[in-house]
Structure formats: structure tokens, C-alpha cells
Amino acid sequence: MTRIEMKESYLPTLLQMRMLVGFLGERAQCAWWPTAFYEASSKLFLEPVFSKTSRLAQYHGVLEAARRLHDEHLSVGSYHLFRLPEEVEQDLHATVQSSVGEELASQAPQSKEAALDALKRLAATGGTSSVGPTAVGSINDLDSTDTLKAIAAAYLSAFTQNAKTYPYLVP
Image (tube, rainbow, N blue to C red):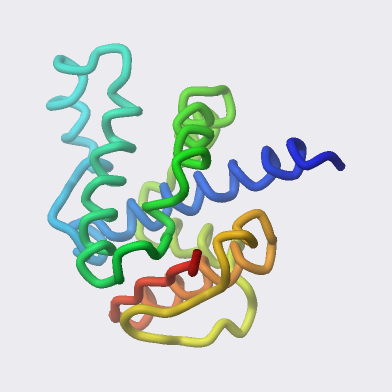
């Protein structure tokens, strides 16, 4: 597998994790941030303004809310699920707009339980529970399955225990 193929292969998992954690963090589920972009009523608000890109607007709205919360709790310069190196952010933006993004959006969970189940499938088994900022590895290992599973496990643990965690990657 070439470096480019490796890079490409982890993007859908990263995007799915962002969507799941974004959905679970909204006020109707776990209320980590006060947004409601993934509620059915948001379409009524978004579609007239963003007729062709309402799905992208949903994604970016949740992304920004989650990014702000994580940035408040983590030191400047650390990376997390909602703030990654610019090249990765651009790749994820392109992925959201691709057929892969369409497919992930069409499979979006409709309930907190469904989202937790989907996150469980991405998580490492026996992940450690932690509250607050939690180092899960190096940004150089972002394309590693183990790193992605550790991030998913940290969020899964926090959401199921009604706690907040901020898994981060060191530069």
C-alpha cells in the first residue's frame, strides 16, 4: 500500500468518528455543546440558506462547536479529533463532499443508542476511561488503526459514563 492509499484509507473512519461524536455531543444527546445541527428541525433552518450544501453546513456547524470546546480544555498546539493538521482538514473537507461523505451522512444514526453502538464498533475493546484531557498518541500516528480506536474508546467511555474527555495527539 502506498503512502497516499494509506492516508486515504483512514479518512472515512476519521470522518465517521467526527460525525458520531459531533452528533452525541449535541444538546439533545449528551449536551457537550449547545447546538442542534443534527436535529430534524435544523433542516428547516439550513436548507433555505444553504440549499445545495445544507449537509456540509451541518457538519461544519458541529465541527466548530466541538472544536471550540476542545480548544478551551487543551493546550495550544495539540491536535484533537476536531482540530487536525491543515492538510488533513482539507482532505476531510473533500471527503465530506465526496460519495463517501454522502454515504456516511445517509447512514447517520437517528438516536443516541444507535450512535453509541456505531462508536463502539470503531473503538478499541477495553479502552481506559478518563476524564478531561487525555493523551492518546502522536499526530504522526493519526493514520494508525490503534490510534483511531483509542480516540473512539475515549469518547465512548465518556459518553456512556456521562463524563467529558478530550483525547488529544501530541505534535
